[in-house]
Every structure is written in structure tokens, then in C-alpha cells.
Image (cartoon, rainbow over all chains, first blue to last red; front, top):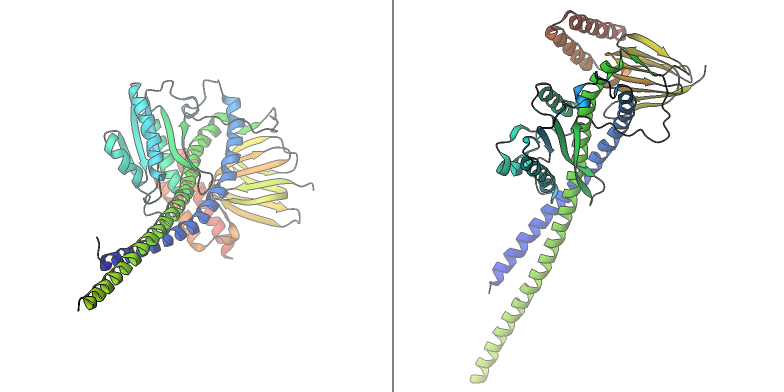
Length: 292
Length: 133
């Protein structure tokens, strides 16, 4: 049976925790708005780039001059998994669900006898995957110092992926991130970026028969494809940032609610035992007086 | 002159979307102007200045750091790697561009690369001096 003082201390500490989680929730809400706007602003570029890519790939597809980034290396022995997670925890199942998706994929590939290499973007994913796959992790990109993700950050990652591809370090590259749908819904997603999957032509776009290319198809495509990889990494990072804040917001919301419940329960317990003590004292006094 | 739709998009945002009468883009093979009903063309862009004339006849200039252009009869899309309105370009932005071009020039190993980098540097310097007046 805890003393009254113990109970009082417990209530104060839960109240302090509640204040912290409440503040974190509000900070996440403010950051979410920003992250969401950034993710939405990046969409038009990605959309138009897809349209261009669909157009140009059509005219190159099947020809032997198609770049390796589009056609692939011809086999799929070595897989590179780029796992994008958050730098911080306390955001519900956000990090672990991305890591789980990547882990399952890696296990499946290893079981098939393929070689797996992992690049971790974000500290949390690195921490989780390090335990199981430390010998497969070839690079860890730390974005902790970055406040708002700019295209340069993504471009750097994109360039390093391409450099590895050109050095023949892998055949297939898959990007893992969490797609943002709403505050309570984020979907961990695996997206293959090398060899590039050519997007379907959007409905209603008529293929104009004779496009002219300057300098020529292959040359444009070979600068468009690396650009597209960087862009995909960029939008993955932005979606991730929005998802992270969304996940943190709902996690902190339920933490605040739990703290509230706990305070209520503890307060009832505290009042009961205070009452019991008073009653006990009264009984002692009365029975003492009666004995006289 | 007839108007057509022009979109200037950078990875971070849409910079311009609306009707224009003429757009001059810095293609890798040389600058070219696009009017309405242009033959479908797709081209890579080099770093340089893009200018467009809107329906009121005002000319706007934007500095772009390379990219791609996709022209069809009724729509012109420019995907710029980075785009800054020339009017908004600060002294610091110029200095950064000049530095970048200088490092590229130093790093260029082929004659072709050297020529491109030197051209880029010259263009930025020229742009800077026109704006300074």
C-alpha cells in the first residue's frame, strides 16, 4: 500500500509527462503542415517528369542503345535496398514498419540466394537493421543536421546510387519509405528505381507521332534517368518527413490521452486512501473516548 | 500573337504556370524560341537564362541551372534543376554560381567539358554585369 506522499509524487510525475507529450504533439502538428506542403509542392515536377519519361522511353524501348539504367544489367543477382527512415524515434510504429518491410524483403532475397546490400538513410532504420544485417549495410546517410530536406540532399543520395550502379555494384535497386496518406494512415512502400519502371501514360495524352529530340533520344534519356532517380529519392524523403510527423502526432496524441487516464485513476486512488485515513483516525478517537 | 500554355517547374515548386506568347529557352544545342504551334520537341537545357513574354507583352527572365524542355503544339513544359528569377537573384547567389562554374572548369578533364564550363562561367559573369547597371 503506497503512502499518500508516494501517490502524490506519482500524480505529479505523470502530469509532467503529459505536458511533454502534449507539447510534442503540437510541435509535430506544426511541422506536419510544413512537411505536407513541401511534399505536395514536389508532386507537379515528378508528374511531368514521368510524362516526359514515358514519352521518350517509348521511342527508345527495345533498341539496343537503351541505357542500362532503363534496360537493367540483364541479371538480378545483386540487390541494393535503400531504406529511408526518420532520424528520431517516438513516432509510433513509423520506423519499425519501414524496417520490417525492408527486413522481409532482404530475408526473401537472401533465401533465394541473391546478394543483398543495404544503404540506410536515417539513423533509426540503421539502428534496427544493424542488429540483423550489419554485414550487409554498406552505407549510412545521416540527415540529422538537415532541418528541411532540399533537393541537394536527395541529389547526393541519387548520385551515389548511380555511381554504385555504374561501378557494377548492384543490378536492382529498391527504395523503401512510407507514403503519406493522412495523419493516421501511412503506408510503408517498396519502390523499384533501377532499372527504371516506365510509368503508364496518363489517360487522355495522345502520342504525338513525331517528337524531335535534341541532342538525341539516348542522350536526353541518359541525363533524364539519373535526374529521375534523384527526384524519386527526393519525393520519398518528403513523403517520409510528412509521414513521420503524422505518425508522431497520433502517437503523442494517444500518449497524452493515456496519461490523462492514468492521472484520473491515481487521483481516485489518492482520494480514497486519504478518506480511509481520516475515517481510521476518527474511529481511533471515538473508540478511545468510549473506553473511558 | 497567339498565346499558349507555359509551365516552369523546379523540384521544389511550380514557378510559373499560365499563358505566354513566346519563350526563349537555353537548349544544349543553342538557344531557341518557342511560339504557339511549335513542332513537338524535347531537349536538354544548359545552365543559362530563360525568358518568356506574357500576354501583356512583359518580358520576365529566369536563371535556370540546366534541365529539360518538352514542347508540344499547345503546351510547353520546362523542368528546371533549379530556377531563380533574375530579379530575385542576390549577389550571394551569383557568387555561388560563379564558384560552382569555376570548380567545374577546374575539374573538367576533356576539351568539350572545359569549353562548356568556360561558357557557363562567361554567361554568369555577363548576366551579373548587366544586372549591376
